[in-house]
Image (tube, rainbow, N blue to C red; front, side, top):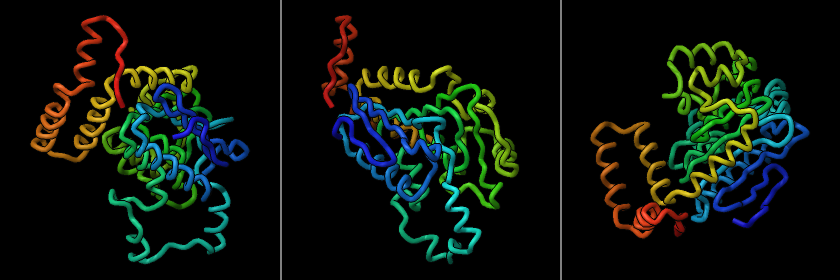
Length: 273
């Protein structure tokens, strides 16, 4: 991926294997319109294919991480311009992982084969909250405002929120947040298990973490992310078998040997992509 690549909605800067991905629709607090959905999917798909990427930081420029669905979409719903469809419409055009277009804008970050760290400030409402859930790790400000806000508009979370909340919070907590749409802070998000860490500067801390990860054996990091994917849905036998497969593939590989040698020689490692 070219350094400094950008669109009207997202910019990507590459530094030492770290892809710094920023939502830049600052006049609308990075709200999700059609162009933003396209940019999220296209950016995620490019990063999936780029072997030089070792970690990703996902953040929002300006006052917010992401304010959720653009208000224009709600106006279309109210006018009847946007209506639901039958089962054929619902099941059509799904990714191999089962996502429709809106869901894929979030799930693509789980499919990116390296760790993705979301740096959240301002607000992360509705679809913006679900986008943050798509990251492996979430660093947030204490005063960030978050919500599963869809119930406010008479809707359910439909951008993979149910898949991604599973395992993060207790079932009753997920239900309470979904049924009420109440706004909670970044500090509470950490208490609930949604936020990984509360930071004064999530973006700076996320970059620091990404740089640390980028200095590890990239093949082992990617293998770890594959293992976490299996852990979500696999049974005990599947997880144990996958652990063994990944480890056998790593042992004696050039990057694994480099990890051992660099530690023994007390020097920085030089890993191949």
